[in-house]
Length: 343
Image (cartoon, rainbow, N blue to C red; front, side, top):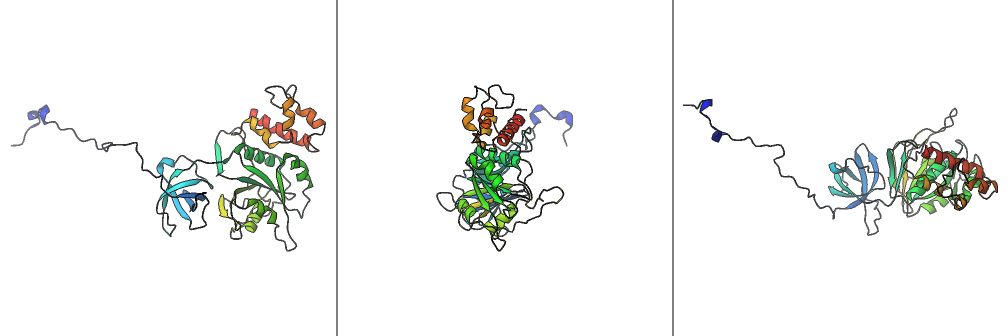
């Protein structure tokens, strides 16, 4: 005869197992210290392309491209071209294979920018770059002095060696660019065309050999043309400058890292029209204005180096011509940057 409800006692109660969370948890994670290391060369919609390192110095091999996803615990960490990562899973690089990025190794350098000088959100562009190649044209479009100063500031702040690659020398001489930046000590590399209309890249290729470099510049300055000349298989699209606005068209939509024929790697980035420096400490901005730095030794303690800063020695330094003919323009640019970061 079946038992009725009133016949049950507390001794008959059997708690239901708590299936949610019943599995014992542990903070121990799998050991991936022996997992192969690779360098990220491209990022595309949640997929990462990497090449394996093949020697003790950490030089990337020009072997198969390994397609990866990142482990769930890395979902909040930015992974960018130039990052050195440990990979687990299928690292053969064969069609249909998929590996997993399980660790991002410490970065030597990080190039970053923000949307503007007040935006606290940083955007990491590349990691572990040795040098930053700022591409600028002599004309069509005209040099963007403000963007160059900002990019130089970001490079010095990141500990990356900057250099200027000057294109379109057939349209105008590089005198104005040389006059403005020669006193900074930043290397200036001319990149004109030969009689056959091909870019002269011998000097630039020598500077890039065996290093990880990144190209940055306004759209339309010839960045993709340089990339295609330096890396014949790059296949980066090139575009013209708008006759009305004088601005270039964005022809590169994502950063990509490619091997150089003479050794080394080159990262091409999308054309930029702004370079926010919200992440840069105001004290580090001076590093991009090397010709003005000696004057600050005579500034009062805590000087902000702005136009209304009492006792600032920069005005006298520039007035005496000790910063060169471009001194007034360079000082105005420095103070504009400092004012934006302070405001």
